[in-house]
Amino acid sequence: MNYPSPPESLDELLSRARAMAGLSLGQLALGLGWDVPPDLKRDKGWIGQLIEQELGATAGSRPEQDFLHLGVELKTIPIDRTGKPLETTYVCVAPLMDTGGLTWQQSLVKHKLERVLWIPVEGERDIPLAQRRIGSPILWQPDEAELALLRQDWEEILEFIALGKVSSLTARHGEVLQLRPKAANAAAKTECILEDGSVGLTNPRGFYLKIPFTHAILRRAFAL
DNA sequence: GGGTGATCATGG
DNA sequence: CCATGATCACCC
Image (cartoon, rainbow, N blue to C red; front, top):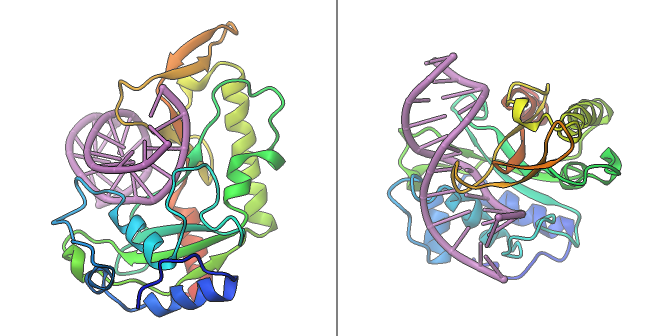
C-alpha cells in the first residue's frame, strides 16, 4: 500500500495514479501515516505533497519536473462539483533579469508543461479535507494550439519584463498564462529591470495557468 | 532569498 | 461572486 520509491516507468506512474482515484484524502493520509490538518490555511501545499509522496515523486524544491526521468510534471488541481478548477495553477518562477537571450523553446514554462500528470481533487471548502476525493489522473501534453497560446503569452510577458515594464504587468495580461506575485509576502524583493535599463527591486513573480485553460484540459480528458 | 507545494481572502 | 494580489510552510 505504500510507494516510497520513484516509479520506474510511465506505466507504473499511471498505475499508481489510477489506483488513487476514488480514494479520499483521509484514506490516503492513513495509508501513509500522515496527519490530516484541520484545513489548508496553514498547510496550503499539503495535498500536493501527500500525492507526491504516494506517487513516489522525489521530494525536493528544484526547478525541475517532478519525475525528471519520465519527463513528467505532477500537478494536483482543486475542482468544484462540476469539474471546474477552483484555482489557477502555478507553473514556475519568472525571470526578471538577464532576459536578453531567452527564447520560448528554452523556457522553464515550456519545459515544465511538456508533459503534466493532472490529479483532480475535490476542493470545495464545505467538504472536510479528509473526505475530499481524488479523481482520475490525466496525462496531458499540450497540443499545437495550446502551445501557440502559451508561447504567445510567454513572449508578450517576457517582452514587458525586458523593457522594464514588469511593474505594469498584472494578472489580466495573457490569454492562458498570467504573471502574479509568488513570494512569502509582499515584502519579498528581487532584482528587476527598470524602464531606463537600470536595476530595481520588485516582488518576485510566477507564471500561472488561468482557470479556463486548465478547465479545457480537464473537459477534453473527460469528454464533458 | 529563491525555490517547491499551493490556497487564502478581499477588493472590484 | 470570484480572480487578483497576498500569503503559508518547508527546504536549501
